[in-house]
Image 1 (cartoon, rainbow, N blue to C red):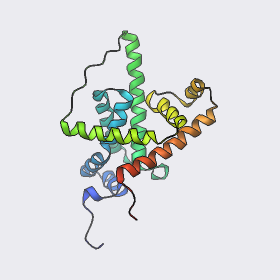
Image 2: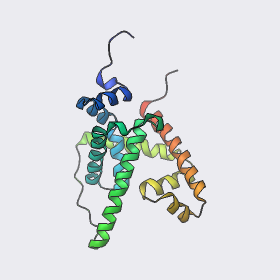
Image 3: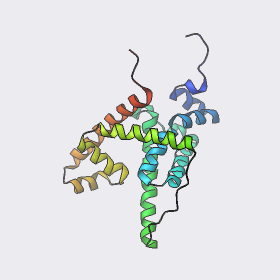
Image 4: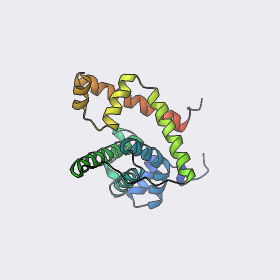
Length: 194
């Protein structure tokens, strides 16, 4: 091991968060490089608009930069935290957009700008990984997660819509998220070395 400190790209999340808390902008760049494509894919899936997704992505990483102490490693890994932030902000934006559209009696979005071919390829690969991981869930888990994350419904609203007990819905979402996290980790990092 005695080959010196790991390069910034090889540093663990904890090390990068420590550097981030000390004001190291390069640490934010490393975390952005590591997680932005997954967070962006989630935002696009929820919002259906690349422009809105880019704004939410910027908000998420701005919050990480300005308040790195809000992340609690005891409550989950950094990707889960960023995903939760992104989902919350995206759902808020979606609700705001729907409300504005109802007030204006129009649902037209401005056309999304095309990204570079590399951006499109990375986005496409991340999307395939997420779709593959979602495909590994049970149909009940997937339905509950999609209604919660992509449609922005509360657990109580999902319970009403599916005519299932609230506890059952919460259990499906929790077990589905754990399974999804594990699948994405395996797909993103590859199988553990034997």
